[in-house]
Length: 195
Image 1 (tube, rainbow, N blue to C red):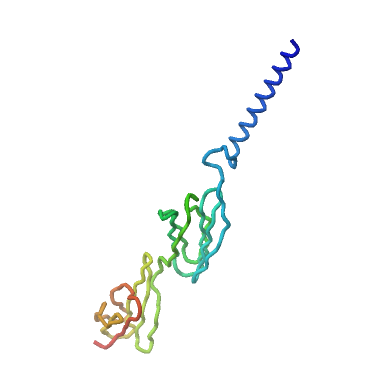
Image 2 (cartoon, rainbow, N blue to C red; image 1 turned 90 degrees about the vertical axis):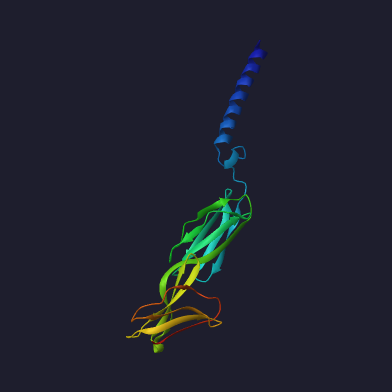
């Protein structure tokens, strides 16, 4: 009889101990038995520096993360890919440091391409002696240029590519500009002459 009582006590203790362990395991977010929430892959964070900004990337708890330190006057955008598939984009306004943002799951290798994405028009080249300026702006990663007439009279202004093909030309008034055109690759020519 007393043997049966001891066996019952052992069964109760074992079942209570197992129940407690089971609850502890499933409530632990870092446990291997917690399913998708288990942290399996982490990498060290590294920083790549570019002209005017840097991009910090790495992973923790199965998520790739990215952070931009933007010291430039441009909006910076980093387009991220995981195993060739598009992931979350990271973007920073001028003179801003972003928080460490989620890019996507560490299901594959992270690759990214950062670019100067936007900037309002600014004086890029000043030809004060010829009374005109070349203005530059960046929109969606593409560079655009125009010519501004600084003379007090109307002038014929133009932009030509390296083969001297006219991209845009027009007579413009005082403090007026030509239409915006995509900045040509390589050399190009600008001028304003009296009409």
